[in-house]
Length: 451
Image (cartoon, rainbow, N blue to C red; front, side, top):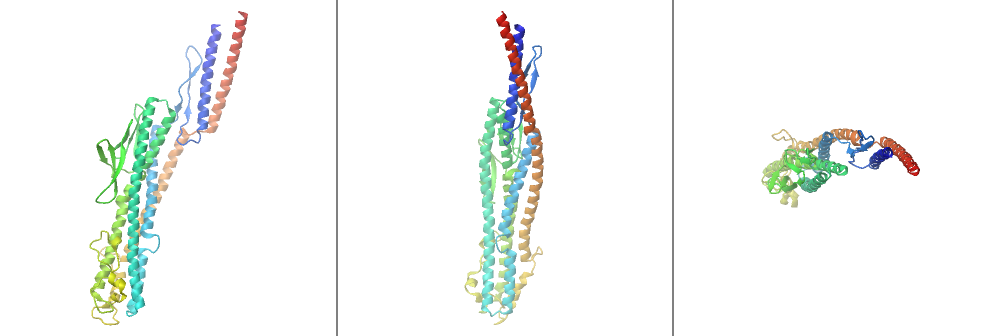
């Protein structure tokens, strides 16, 4: 009787173990397409002396080092992708969407050449005035577009900071849940997923300490999440540059990390603002200032059709700062094309030396050895080169990210064929244990009947 009861205990333990295996295999198959899911396994252990088998708790197929490399690669890819997108928009602002600055200059010089050939032709004078106004408007439009890119970049930084703060709080909450139940495999997957999302936004890295808690740190060492505690990611506008800055705030401690972040989509906008947009604004203003300065210098020493000299062609700019947005044709010239100084001072009717001098600006070179048109082309080319480099960065980082994702899939991903094989194996063993239990039960019944 006692031997039969021992066999029954052995069988019931075996049935429970096989059923646990069925549950794990079924759960893996059910989550085969769940993003961030790590397949689980269950290990069986033979019971010494007593015989039989027992199952342990399900464990995840996951590697902390690989997970951290995936987060790093994800942050780099997110940064490269965001950078390429933003640079493409900046390129459109500087050189796309209609007539380019070098084309406006070329048109203006071509019409100055025609007007110089016929300085008394009012139609040709009117055309040069229209070209002057169009050039100023083109500078205005592009300066406004670059400023819009700056404002949008600042807004994106603020939005990302808000999202990162929410994710940091969610990560801390996941740490708390895992501390309460270290066997919660689903929450561990969820925590990894949150950390990956955080990496895409702000870069940085994460590690799990000996107590099982995840610590998330930005480039430069600023701590965003430490166990159950989460800092907030906040932004402000630098009053000197007008660009967004980022701070990590923990209670009363506020740490500026703007220049330390080197990953995530927020890193792209911070780098874009501090370098590319600032450079585009500066170069655009410098070019507008030089155009205004050089044309006014020639125009003011020559005379209009009425013989009067000393007039400007554009409204003067006090300095390069803001010159592109403020650039405008001189109001007097806009109202009266006869004020266009195509003649030399005292040259009389039909003189065209002023017009020739203005036309000569087409080939005049500045201290950098550039003409005005070449400077305009160079301004656009500088952004274009950065777009090309950013596109190459996206391709490179995508290859790295895909490779690491492939490694994760091979380790943590669900192979449905393998799991179905496991499921069949566990089911067959479970059926066998059920038959074994039925046999022992029948033997016990016979024994009781005979007794």
